[in-house]
Image (tube, rainbow, N blue to C red; front, side, top):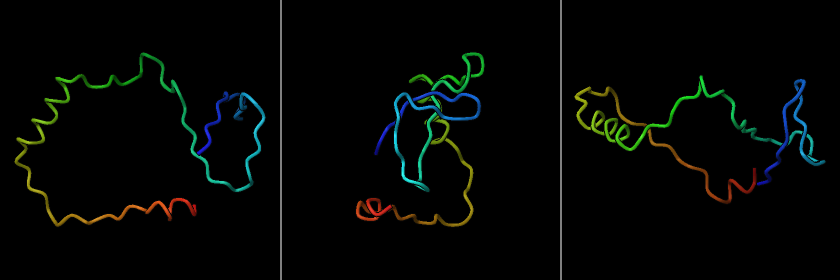
Length: 81
C-alpha cells in the first residue's frame, strides 16, 4: 500500500510531491479533519462505551431470521487485486 499526502483544492487533489499512478488503479482517499470542531462527533469515553455495551447486553429485542455467514478474502486473493 502507498500513502500519498497532499491537499484538495479547486476540485482536484494535489499531492505534496509528484507521483505516478497507473490508469484505472483503485484508490482509497481518506480526508483528515473533514468536519470542523463544531460538527465533529466526539468519540465515546470509556464510560460511554461501557453504557453502550450494557445496553446491548440488556436488550431484549428479538432478531428475526438467521445470520448470513461472510467470507473474508485470503491474503492471496488480496494480493491479486
